Length: 327
Image (cartoon, rainbow, N blue to C red; front, side):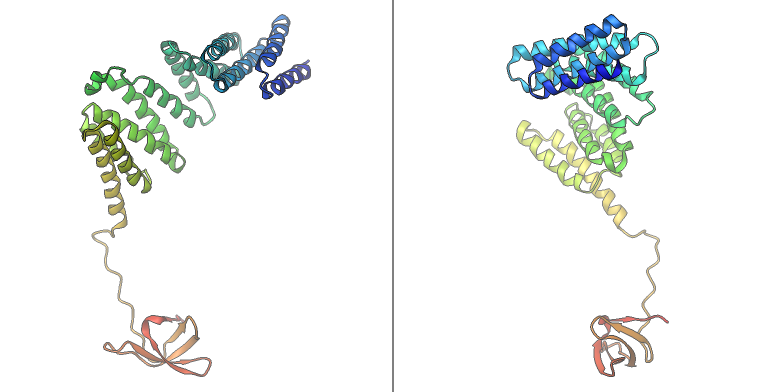
Protein backbone atom coordinates (compact mmCIF):
# COMPACT_ATOMS: atom_id res chain seq x y z
CA UNK A 1 0.00 0.00 0.00
CA UNK A 2 2.75 2.42 0.93
CA UNK A 3 4.63 1.74 -2.30
CA UNK A 4 1.44 2.43 -4.30
CA UNK A 5 1.07 5.84 -2.64
CA UNK A 6 4.72 6.67 -3.26
CA UNK A 7 4.32 5.72 -6.93
CA UNK A 8 1.30 7.98 -7.32
CA UNK A 9 3.16 10.85 -5.66
CA UNK A 10 6.11 10.38 -8.03
CA UNK A 11 3.78 10.42 -11.05
CA UNK A 12 2.16 13.65 -9.83
CA UNK A 13 5.58 15.23 -9.28
CA UNK A 14 6.66 14.25 -12.79
CA UNK A 15 3.53 15.92 -14.19
CA UNK A 16 4.20 19.04 -12.10
CA UNK A 17 7.77 19.20 -13.39
CA UNK A 18 6.37 19.38 -16.92
CA UNK A 19 4.47 22.54 -15.82
CA UNK A 20 1.09 20.78 -16.08
CA UNK A 21 0.14 21.94 -12.61
CA UNK A 22 -3.62 21.43 -13.05
CA UNK A 23 -3.17 17.75 -13.97
CA UNK A 24 -0.73 17.27 -11.10
CA UNK A 25 -3.16 18.95 -8.69
CA UNK A 26 -6.02 16.72 -9.85
CA UNK A 27 -3.87 13.61 -9.33
CA UNK A 28 -2.94 14.67 -5.81
CA UNK A 29 -6.55 15.58 -4.98
CA UNK A 30 -7.64 12.08 -6.05
CA UNK A 31 -4.92 10.59 -3.86
CA UNK A 32 -6.09 12.72 -0.92
CA UNK A 33 -9.64 11.41 -1.31
CA UNK A 34 -8.34 7.84 -1.30
CA UNK A 35 -6.22 8.35 1.82
CA UNK A 36 -9.11 10.10 3.60
CA UNK A 37 -11.37 7.14 2.82
CA UNK A 38 -8.75 4.78 4.19
CA UNK A 39 -8.33 6.86 7.36
CA UNK A 40 -4.58 7.30 6.82
CA UNK A 41 -4.35 10.74 8.40
CA UNK A 42 -0.55 10.85 8.66
CA UNK A 43 -0.01 10.10 4.98
CA UNK A 44 -2.89 12.41 4.05
CA UNK A 45 -1.26 15.30 5.98
CA UNK A 46 2.01 14.67 4.13
CA UNK A 47 0.31 14.65 0.72
CA UNK A 48 -1.66 17.82 1.54
CA UNK A 49 1.60 19.55 2.53
CA UNK A 50 3.25 18.43 -0.71
CA UNK A 51 0.22 19.59 -2.70
CA UNK A 52 0.37 23.04 -1.07
CA UNK A 53 4.11 23.30 -1.75
CA UNK A 54 3.60 22.53 -5.45
CA UNK A 55 0.81 25.08 -5.75
CA UNK A 56 2.94 27.81 -4.17
CA UNK A 57 5.83 26.97 -6.51
CA UNK A 58 3.46 27.17 -9.48
CA UNK A 59 2.14 30.53 -8.28
CA UNK A 60 5.69 31.89 -8.32
CA UNK A 61 6.04 30.94 -12.00
CA UNK A 62 2.76 32.51 -13.16
CA UNK A 63 2.71 36.25 -13.82
CA UNK A 64 -1.07 36.77 -14.06
CA UNK A 65 -2.46 37.96 -10.74
CA UNK A 66 -5.86 36.21 -10.65
CA UNK A 67 -4.79 32.59 -11.21
CA UNK A 68 -1.80 33.18 -8.95
CA UNK A 69 -4.07 34.25 -6.10
CA UNK A 70 -6.34 31.26 -6.70
CA UNK A 71 -3.38 28.89 -6.50
CA UNK A 72 -2.22 30.49 -3.27
CA UNK A 73 -5.67 30.33 -1.71
CA UNK A 74 -5.92 26.65 -2.66
CA UNK A 75 -2.45 26.07 -1.23
CA UNK A 76 -3.54 27.68 2.04
CA UNK A 77 -6.58 25.39 2.27
CA UNK A 78 -4.40 22.32 1.67
CA UNK A 79 -1.83 23.49 4.19
CA UNK A 80 -4.49 24.25 6.81
CA UNK A 81 -5.90 20.77 6.36
CA UNK A 82 -2.40 19.31 6.75
CA UNK A 83 -1.86 21.26 9.98
CA UNK A 84 -5.20 20.11 11.40
CA UNK A 85 -4.48 16.48 10.52
CA UNK A 86 -0.94 16.69 11.93
CA UNK A 87 -2.26 18.14 15.22
CA UNK A 88 -4.65 15.23 15.72
CA UNK A 89 -3.25 12.32 17.68
CA UNK A 90 0.40 11.44 18.11
CA UNK A 91 1.87 12.62 14.80
CA UNK A 92 5.60 13.05 14.19
CA UNK A 93 7.34 16.38 14.73
CA UNK A 94 8.58 16.25 11.12
CA UNK A 95 5.00 16.03 9.85
CA UNK A 96 3.86 18.94 12.03
CA UNK A 97 6.81 21.12 11.02
CA UNK A 98 6.30 20.51 7.32
CA UNK A 99 2.59 21.30 7.50
CA UNK A 100 3.08 24.47 9.55
CA UNK A 101 5.94 25.69 7.32
CA UNK A 102 3.84 25.53 4.18
CA UNK A 103 0.89 27.17 5.93
CA UNK A 104 3.13 30.06 7.01
CA UNK A 105 4.49 30.42 3.47
CA UNK A 106 0.98 30.36 2.00
CA UNK A 107 -0.27 33.03 4.41
CA UNK A 108 2.81 35.13 3.66
CA UNK A 109 1.99 35.11 -0.05
CA UNK A 110 -1.66 36.26 0.23
CA UNK A 111 -2.47 39.96 0.71
CA UNK A 112 -4.46 40.79 3.84
CA UNK A 113 -3.41 37.71 5.81
CA UNK A 114 -0.68 39.38 7.83
CA UNK A 115 -2.24 38.89 11.32
CA UNK A 116 -2.78 35.17 10.71
CA UNK A 117 0.69 34.91 9.17
CA UNK A 118 2.32 36.52 12.22
CA UNK A 119 0.49 34.17 14.58
CA UNK A 120 1.45 31.10 12.52
CA UNK A 121 5.06 32.31 12.22
CA UNK A 122 5.36 32.67 16.00
CA UNK A 123 4.02 29.13 16.42
CA UNK A 124 6.48 27.81 13.82
CA UNK A 125 9.45 29.52 15.49
CA UNK A 126 8.43 28.08 18.86
CA UNK A 127 8.27 24.61 17.31
CA UNK A 128 11.66 25.06 15.63
CA UNK A 129 13.22 26.14 18.92
CA UNK A 130 12.06 22.86 20.45
CA UNK A 131 13.37 20.82 17.54
CA UNK A 132 16.35 18.52 18.22
CA UNK A 133 17.92 19.62 14.92
CA UNK A 134 19.92 22.80 14.45
CA UNK A 135 17.32 25.23 13.10
CA UNK A 136 19.20 28.51 13.69
CA UNK A 137 19.31 29.43 10.00
CA UNK A 138 15.58 28.97 9.52
CA UNK A 139 14.72 30.68 12.79
CA UNK A 140 16.91 33.64 11.84
CA UNK A 141 15.12 33.98 8.49
CA UNK A 142 11.68 33.66 10.10
CA UNK A 143 12.51 36.32 12.72
CA UNK A 144 13.90 38.48 9.93
CA UNK A 145 10.65 38.21 7.96
CA UNK A 146 8.60 39.06 11.04
CA UNK A 147 10.71 42.14 11.64
CA UNK A 148 10.44 43.45 8.10
CA UNK A 149 6.68 42.93 8.08
CA UNK A 150 6.36 45.00 11.27
CA UNK A 151 7.96 48.12 9.73
CA UNK A 152 5.54 51.09 10.05
CA UNK A 153 3.64 51.97 6.89
CA UNK A 154 3.24 55.61 7.89
CA UNK A 155 6.47 57.55 7.35
CA UNK A 156 5.64 59.84 10.28
CA UNK A 157 5.91 56.91 12.71
CA UNK A 158 9.57 56.36 11.84
CA UNK A 159 10.73 59.14 14.15
CA UNK A 160 9.23 57.39 17.19
CA UNK A 161 11.25 54.46 18.46
CA UNK A 162 8.22 52.84 20.07
CA UNK A 163 6.70 52.52 16.59
CA UNK A 164 9.58 50.34 15.44
CA UNK A 165 9.89 48.36 18.69
CA UNK A 166 8.50 45.13 17.19
CA UNK A 167 10.74 45.39 14.12
CA UNK A 168 13.72 46.04 16.40
CA UNK A 169 12.89 43.06 18.63
CA UNK A 170 12.59 40.63 15.71
CA UNK A 171 15.70 41.85 13.89
CA UNK A 172 17.75 41.68 17.08
CA UNK A 173 16.72 38.04 17.47
CA UNK A 174 17.66 37.32 13.84
CA UNK A 175 21.00 39.07 14.40
CA UNK A 176 21.75 37.04 17.54
CA UNK A 177 21.11 33.79 15.67
CA UNK A 178 23.30 34.93 12.78
CA UNK A 179 26.13 35.73 15.18
CA UNK A 180 25.71 32.34 16.88
CA UNK A 181 26.46 30.67 13.54
CA UNK A 182 30.01 32.02 13.65
CA UNK A 183 31.90 32.43 10.39
CA UNK A 184 29.07 30.77 8.46
CA UNK A 185 26.65 33.52 9.48
CA UNK A 186 28.86 36.63 9.40
CA UNK A 187 27.66 37.96 6.02
CA UNK A 188 24.02 37.41 7.00
CA UNK A 189 24.63 39.06 10.39
CA UNK A 190 26.16 42.07 8.61
CA UNK A 191 23.04 42.41 6.45
CA UNK A 192 20.71 42.28 9.45
CA UNK A 193 22.91 44.67 11.47
CA UNK A 194 22.76 47.25 8.67
CA UNK A 195 18.97 46.93 8.37
CA UNK A 196 18.63 47.33 12.12
CA UNK A 197 20.97 50.34 12.15
CA UNK A 198 18.93 52.02 9.40
CA UNK A 199 15.73 51.52 11.37
CA UNK A 200 17.28 52.79 14.61
CA UNK A 201 18.84 55.73 12.78
CA UNK A 202 15.56 56.79 11.24
CA UNK A 203 13.98 56.52 14.70
CA UNK A 204 16.73 58.77 16.12
CA UNK A 205 18.12 56.10 18.47
CA UNK A 206 21.80 56.85 17.80
CA UNK A 207 22.91 55.56 21.23
CA UNK A 208 21.32 52.20 20.36
CA UNK A 209 23.29 52.13 17.11
CA UNK A 210 26.53 52.71 19.01
CA UNK A 211 25.67 49.77 21.29
CA UNK A 212 24.79 47.67 18.24
CA UNK A 213 28.08 48.58 16.54
CA UNK A 214 30.04 47.63 19.66
CA UNK A 215 28.21 44.30 19.75
CA UNK A 216 28.81 43.25 16.14
CA UNK A 217 32.25 44.79 15.56
CA UNK A 218 34.22 41.89 17.12
CA UNK A 219 32.46 39.37 14.88
CA UNK A 220 31.94 40.96 11.47
CA UNK A 221 34.72 40.47 8.88
CA UNK A 222 36.98 43.35 7.87
CA UNK A 223 35.34 43.59 4.44
CA UNK A 224 32.06 44.52 6.15
CA UNK A 225 33.42 47.99 6.94
CA UNK A 226 33.71 49.07 3.27
CA UNK A 227 30.36 47.50 2.45
CA UNK A 228 28.61 49.35 5.31
CA UNK A 229 30.12 52.66 4.16
CA UNK A 230 28.84 51.96 0.64
CA UNK A 231 25.36 51.34 2.08
CA UNK A 232 25.58 54.69 3.90
CA UNK A 233 26.33 56.52 0.64
CA UNK A 234 23.60 54.61 -1.18
CA UNK A 235 21.04 55.47 1.51
CA UNK A 236 21.95 59.17 1.42
CA UNK A 237 21.63 59.31 -2.37
CA UNK A 238 18.21 57.67 -2.31
CA UNK A 239 16.62 59.36 0.70
CA UNK A 240 18.87 62.29 1.53
CA UNK A 241 19.73 63.37 5.03
CA UNK A 242 22.72 62.37 7.08
CA UNK A 243 21.35 60.76 10.23
CA UNK A 244 21.16 57.22 8.89
CA UNK A 245 24.36 57.60 6.88
CA UNK A 246 26.13 58.82 10.00
CA UNK A 247 24.76 55.87 11.96
CA UNK A 248 26.14 53.40 9.44
CA UNK A 249 29.51 55.11 9.35
CA UNK A 250 29.58 54.90 13.14
CA UNK A 251 29.22 51.13 12.81
CA UNK A 252 31.97 50.97 10.17
CA UNK A 253 34.25 53.07 12.40
CA UNK A 254 33.71 50.61 15.24
CA UNK A 255 34.78 47.71 13.02
CA UNK A 256 37.87 49.62 11.84
CA UNK A 257 38.80 50.52 15.42
CA UNK A 258 38.50 46.87 16.45
CA UNK A 259 40.78 45.83 13.58
CA UNK A 260 43.38 48.43 14.56
CA UNK A 261 43.26 47.32 18.18
CA UNK A 262 43.66 43.63 17.34
CA UNK A 263 46.45 44.20 14.81
CA UNK A 264 48.55 46.52 17.05
CA UNK A 265 51.10 44.91 19.40
CA UNK A 266 50.10 44.79 23.08
CA UNK A 267 51.20 48.00 24.84
CA UNK A 268 53.16 46.12 27.53
CA UNK A 269 54.80 43.64 25.18
CA UNK A 270 58.58 43.64 25.41
CA UNK A 271 60.43 44.29 22.13
CA UNK A 272 62.01 41.20 20.58
CA UNK A 273 65.72 40.75 21.43
CA UNK A 274 68.12 41.99 18.75
CA UNK A 275 69.55 39.35 16.45
CA UNK A 276 73.12 38.30 17.32
CA UNK A 277 75.57 39.67 14.72
CA UNK A 278 77.47 37.21 12.54
CA UNK A 279 80.89 36.22 13.79
CA UNK A 280 83.75 34.25 12.28
CA UNK A 281 83.00 30.56 12.23
CA UNK A 282 79.17 30.90 12.06
CA UNK A 283 77.47 28.63 9.59
CA UNK A 284 75.13 30.47 7.19
CA UNK A 285 72.89 29.70 4.21
CA UNK A 286 72.39 31.68 0.99
CA UNK A 287 69.36 31.14 -1.25
CA UNK A 288 71.54 30.64 -4.36
CA UNK A 289 74.92 29.38 -3.15
CA UNK A 290 73.83 27.15 -0.30
CA UNK A 291 75.70 26.78 2.99
CA UNK A 292 79.07 28.15 4.03
CA UNK A 293 81.17 29.45 6.92
CA UNK A 294 81.81 33.10 7.86
CA UNK A 295 85.49 33.85 7.11
CA UNK A 296 85.37 37.63 7.69
CA UNK A 297 82.56 39.03 9.86
CA UNK A 298 80.69 42.19 8.83
CA UNK A 299 81.25 45.46 10.71
CA UNK A 300 78.69 48.04 11.89
CA UNK A 301 79.65 50.45 9.09
CA UNK A 302 79.96 47.87 6.37
CA UNK A 303 77.39 45.13 6.34
CA UNK A 304 79.36 42.76 4.11
CA UNK A 305 80.73 39.39 5.16
CA UNK A 306 83.15 37.06 3.40
CA UNK A 307 81.73 33.54 3.23
CA UNK A 308 83.69 30.37 2.45
CA UNK A 309 80.97 28.37 0.72
CA UNK A 310 80.96 24.59 0.70
CA UNK A 311 81.54 24.62 -3.07
CA UNK A 312 85.07 25.97 -2.40
CA UNK A 313 84.41 29.60 -3.41
CA UNK A 314 84.83 32.60 -1.11
CA UNK A 315 82.25 35.30 -1.82
CA UNK A 316 81.52 38.73 -0.34
CA UNK A 317 77.82 38.80 0.61
CA UNK A 318 75.38 41.33 2.09
CA UNK A 319 74.53 40.28 5.65
CA UNK A 320 70.78 40.59 4.99
CA UNK A 321 70.98 37.88 2.29
CA UNK A 322 72.32 35.30 4.76
CA UNK A 323 70.47 33.09 7.21
CA UNK A 324 72.26 31.67 10.22
CA UNK A 325 72.23 27.85 10.40
CA UNK A 326 71.77 26.85 14.01
CA UNK A 327 73.75 23.81 15.10
